Image (tube, rainbow, N blue to C red; front, side, top):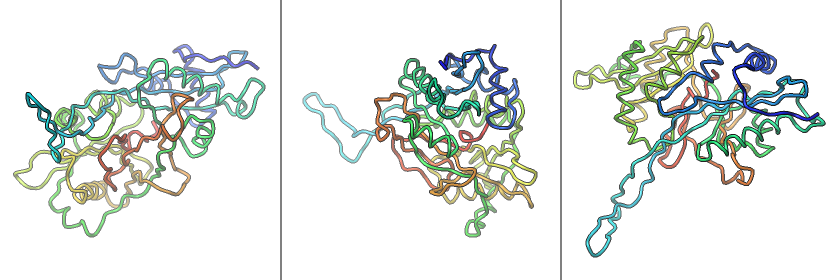
Length: 361
């Protein structure tokens, strides 16, 4: 059976929604598809996303893979500072300078699905491979310099890895974020409060403008356009923004912002966070998280992503997509930062992703 591949158009959305329900067991609404694939989320992007599909000879959609396109920030490389003289260049060791960083496209692979009855070996070839070959071709042709990544579950990751599409970075799973007794003394100096989204967006946008040039890891640009699309414009999920301040008059500015959403009746999940001072002590960051857990209330649990060497039912695998079959898996590795601030990532050319990136939306 010859498979046909092409990009997904709006006229085929109804087939995508049917395939989504068959593959994942829960529905995606047309409004959510429109929000994810068509709604503009940055002034600098010509297109917000694209998707590719595989059809059988009766033009039934049997496989789908989406790609969400973001404006990212690529930090500069730290190089030795040089002083230029008329007759020589003297290198001042021990005084590095930071070249200016630049924006870079970052693409997240999402909604990879194959119709249940089309899985496995078929006369026309493995449908999954046909799908991913078309996705790889589109990425290589249109976005050759983009950083492409994703967060599949364990089983789909293993298939993608076996066929040479995915390169593992590390595993993550959701765990309760509990208060630490040793940090309890720090909580008395913190004030955490729900924040209005409009006011909070202005604060976060100002933080991004002031701090982006000092980011030392690659990450999605968390500017106002991204936050409006990601949290305010979602058609179904309600997100809560929290502001953390110090209870002292000389530090009136917010120290941090958190985003949470309800996960179940008695639990919430930490979806995103930013800190005004990127170099703030880790213990103080953890104290801010403790304050958030207290604020959510008694009888409710706060969950967040943690790096794990083990595999759990909810494990997701942070992976980089290998955009060329000539690239060896070992050459495609990108050292990723942590999806929580339990451990501080070391400086370097790495991708930092936050819980919002792993959140299933």
